[in-house]
Length: 102
Image (tube, rainbow, N blue to C red; front, top):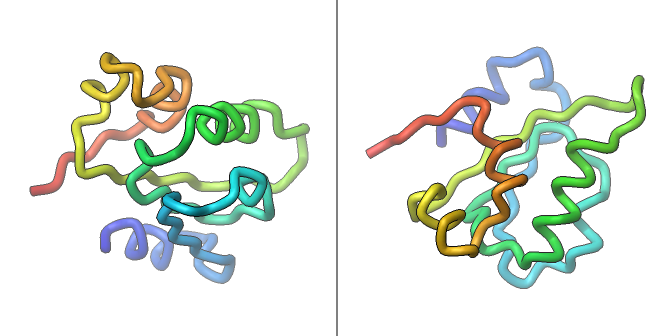
């Protein structure tokens, strides 16, 4: 998996690498300790969880631990944003680097 390779070759390789399939995961879990985080099927997040992730990414106090976030999806994310199934704010935060594989 590309995300795991990125983590293993980074300066954060000694920190946790977390893979999350959001189907069935409580929304409150999302704001727990984060290091390198891979959001598998990011479009499966509930609208409430998407809003929480935006808050987590944008409202961290200065000096608090940084995190790397990578996301994957089996669907075209811009199409999901247009359909209202993915938050435009979350997509904007996750789209710093866009790789299409396959």
